[in-house]
Amino acid sequence: MPQLIEIGSLAVAPQPETLRVPELEKGVGCDFSSYLLVPDNTLDERIGAAVQKLGSDLVILGHHYQRDEVIRFARFRGDSLKLSQQAAECDAKYIVFCGVHFMAESADVLRHEGQTVILPDMNAGCSMADMADIGQVETCWAELDAVGGLGVVPVTYMNSTAAIKAFTGERGGSVVTSSNAARVIEWAFTRGQRVLFLPDEHLGRNTAFRMGIPLDEMVVWDPYQELGGNTEAALRKAKIILWKGYCSVHQRFLPEHVDRVRADHPGIRVIVHPECRFEVAQKADEIGSTEGIIRAIEKSPPGTKWAVGTEIHLVNRLAKEHTDREIISLDPHVCVCTTMFRITPQHLLWAVESLVAGNVVNPITVPDEQRRWARVALDRMLSLR
Ligand code: 13P
Ligand code: SF4
Image (cartoon, rainbow, N blue to C red):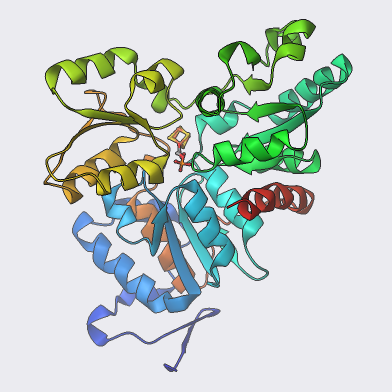
């Protein structure tokens, strides 16, 4: 066992002299503004030094859409499903989540006693998650209940707030991710006659259609209209009620983009994330969750050409890692998730150096009552692996 040195309230393993960064011992780290001025060429060394000092007290989780300068420090990288599994299984005292707010909230729900989840920039949110407000969802539920006899099971995408996950858990439903949506919807149909799918209309439609549910048995629920803009008869006919929400990144991909890459790159295979529009998914050769896209490209033979419909950082990384395949973005105009992009190396440095100094910045704390039911919804999903 290495000897431990106390820094602030934190016990860390001693580091070789070359990795010592004097600022670390001075208790820096409370104020982010000073980190804006940290020279780029020192960031890697300082992050690396702090990570080493924290040792097994720290785990950094990174979503595949993070920029390279950040994801290179992730002990585990993955999509939402993989990262939630990691969060549930890891023992580190501090989980620094390089992703967006709903992911860090889920990690906080799944963490063990005594662990703390940190989001390096609190402004890293998700516009899709914000499209399902808990008040709107409660109104929707009450309206569906008033119709009577619908037997609705709520299912919410990981990309939703902890409040929506708790709502779902309390009403007998589950969380889904893009990697397991079909399995969870199948499970939901064993518990009721209809599924209320929150908050991504496209993931819900693409998944349900591939499961054999025809489009005329799906309706869209617009929270700004009475009965979601539906008639009672349409709701009784529907098997899936799709919340009117979408990902601003994936919705940018259009059917015309598929036509263009096919014309410009004969023989190219098109693979898109299921958050893309139905018309785009229908034109693609394959639909894959983030991990599914990575797997499909990894197992394709050298020389394969791919046009990928997902966030640009992942597409660029795949292109760099597989130089014997031709990998391009389906959209010639960059599709970046601007909120994932908010996690900068400066934010990561601030988070980890603050820990070394004994300060926890940007902890994510889901209120107890929400945690309890959100955990039920997440556990239902994780038990269906
Ligand atoms: P997955 O991580 O489930 O593929 O979701 C993609 C996404 O949009 C994350 O915000
Ligand atoms: Fe939200 Fe889309 Fe960004 Fe994912 S890629 S965090 S769904 S806006």
